[in-house]
Image 1: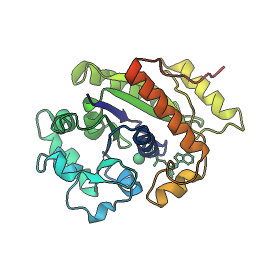
Image 2: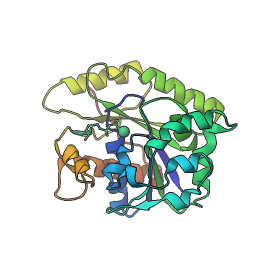
Image 3: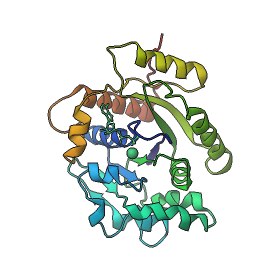
Image 4: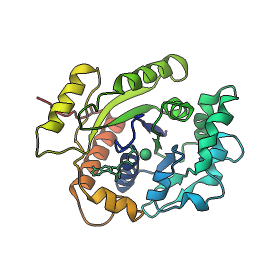
Length: 263
Ligand code: ADP
Ligand code: MG
């Protein structure tokens, strides 16, 4: 069986794309067959995995609009991850899909054609709660919410949780909320920790461990078309490796997901 995980937060710059790429590389390193789906018209995931969106003939846009089967757009990447790429065409998908019945189910239907070829599918949602994110949440077994550890990080979390709950009511009753993943975490100050304690207080949302530390290696990695897991060891890569191990233990043997202690 394939496990489908959507990585969503309507806020930009919270490390959704970084989390999808790094977690995919870490899961692949653990021997899982991983497919990532770029649902952001900006194509940052596609680019960061070494493919130029401007040079692609077809992408997730043609898949969602029913013109091309999903298998035909899948690309391979250096780190053994398979990729359903995005191009700027995807910006027009909202308008096309809005005219269609069952528009929230396009991605779910496309993934069903892959016949469980992959162990894990990771979906990189765009920074909005529009029809693309609804497709991601509808296709997913679970959703992970990266949360940048800065003041006002909680703004928008309430709205996202309401969307998750509406998706459960209407298109995907089995959707599980795994929790928030602290990103861009700075262990040297108490600020990051205070922000997480605030979020944990306000919402019924588990905050997962480990927190992903802020390090310059992430920017270097995505600029070079590889993930932070490739090349020399780093704290950031190690954190995603640990997260991958926790998720695998959770999926394989129902182990409880480790949570971050904010006290
Ligand atoms: P989103 O997809 O939510 O918009 P990105 O994954 O594109 O966010 O990350 C936004 C920026 O933050 C990128 O430039 C990325 O390289 C950087 N970044 C992500 N995670 C970290 C981290 N742990 N430490 C330092 N920079 C990071
Ligand atoms: Mg992104």
